[in-house]
Length: 448
Image (cartoon, rainbow, N blue to C red; front, side, top):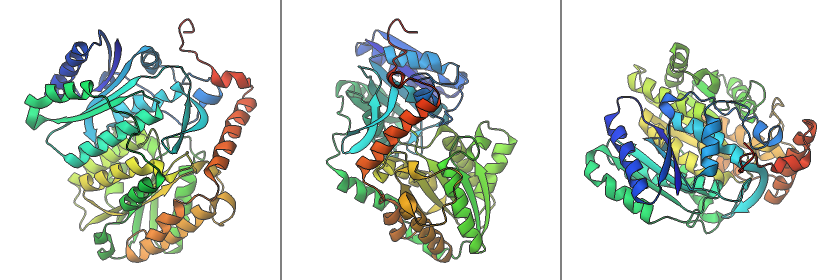
């Protein structure tokens, strides 16, 4: 059997280096006679720009030609896909996330349903078992639980026949081998815990609800926003939503500054300065798309730098954070794992959680079109933004009514899926691509 190990191990991180060597040996002992390892910290990869060229222009192939081409081919040829890095806010750090985001070309754009929710259809006949191994400096049950939930959601997304997840920590290195062996010996069924949407909805609402401490912090006076989309300026739903929020804050005499995810491509002075600005305001408001059940890699990098800036900040008084997570699937429940990660970020960076807005069906937003009037398919979004900003400024929290409003789509899920599939076909037509090519399988044997 063949495994592919995507590892993000920073140079000089002796503990993670030992873990990586142990993972390789345990995979061999479990019957994986071949393990293709990609050292992502030593590999320069372009970030996913979310333009969907790998679906509607060059189906099955990313527009960026770098080491990810070899990674995707290796994953296609493998029996197991293994992720290894330090746990970041309950998920993966930005280095590994860059590679994960660009595995999108292994799927087709068309929608189907699995485990009560919408997902993409498979491009190939066989999929890989998914294994996620995370490292922490010390034990943390909450972070480990979120890490496992992310692996489960990823496995459902990628149609993995089974999955496993384990988090080890530096304080219990003697237990690493047995923990990894147990994971390999007892594969789990993706999505087995999902019995229906009602439980997912309640969990999402609980995660989105504001911390009561936020209401005691006084009026919001200064907001720094981050647009988490890596798309070109003026082309993303997240930017359109952020601008709509900024207009509403301005009407209430709240100062607003906006940063975009592409400011965080590199860890250089401009990126650190942007992170410090986000860390120094009364309210940090993130508006981000959902990429593979979590934040895009650039957004993850931004949050890493913001958390570091918060640790070094001399800002007086408590700070608040709020988030709007925008998902292209019709169900807001798809954002549940990312919302958990948002709460972990708030804790790690010392923010008070002011609430989250889980938005499904992001395809109804037309980039560049103002969200000022509650009409058509954006009715619930506009109303939720109005409610959220008004109450957030005056009381310091996003109200439950705004959360429930934005999470309730203005069209049936089946109709959204139909329109979305028609949209993919229309985009292919605009690019001069024959419809049959949308199902292309360029990675199959003999087509390299």
